[in-house]
Length: 397
Image 1 (tube, rainbow, N blue to C red):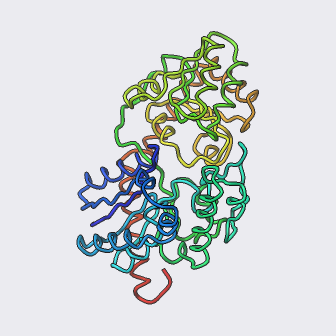
Image 2 (cartoon, helix red, strand yellow):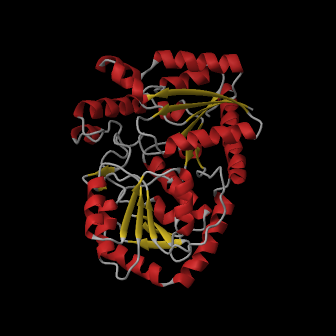
Image 3 (cartoon, helix red, strand yellow):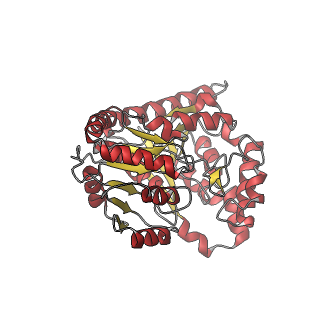
């Protein structure tokens, strides 16, 4: 199969970038012919505001490049990861006109929410869900706290909803979880075009021992990730247990203050993946204290690959991904006291965690391996190509 994979890199590297790289490598290793098309948000700084607005709505230059690549390489499927803001939905139409089927992975909720997170003022917000023009996102400056940029983002979504781009210009969507599929269906996306395919781990390091006995947080220290819930919860945990934190971000000062007051907290900042995997394997469990609707964090797949249970907010996709008392523990979202109870229980019940470790590794082997994923990805592409054939035959695709 000839596949064109397209991605707009963010200024700050994240999980979507890694998924793009991993899936591209996986497709190549499976013998597919893969062409990559990428742009980077670092180039935004050199563009005028009006030019950027125009490209966000409809980037003709990028669309021409996509069409040229499709024709030159006889591409069967164009798989888009992130199109915002420089690729734009114009490239969907270009790919289809040039003869390819179109697939879009729904890594976050950008196509439903201008801020992409369903988060406002530290709480879940669905004010824009289902609205043709998501004006609350502009009013509340949900994109980077900038009203102008938020208005442009909301306008882009509104325009393409009105012309039904998301119904007609994409053959298949990839949702990472059933929860995400339901949200996009609620938001008006054609349910029959949304397929659930999780992220995966390309490099399986095998199960760890959990012998370190500490709690582990891995991720950005930013709004929505719940570090402001975890730190006060840790104050309530009794005993000489350790909390190891890997990551950096806007809320790093909160971690510095907590570490200065509590010697049980160890903050290592951003670390190479070898060190992250080692910490995951040694941890008693990992903590996901998010207060927003997570997609499918790579850290979930990574932790399960190491056999490490997860203490997670009982919220959104995390309720689906972590099974209470089987592959981890749930706590009430945003509640430090309930989180402290679950942390204490986990740290004091090593035998139960041992059984969970077995379940986590089994879950990984069933859902999140490269071998399982390549089959699912191929099925998505085949479905998109079949939809395109139906469309060309004059029937709805």
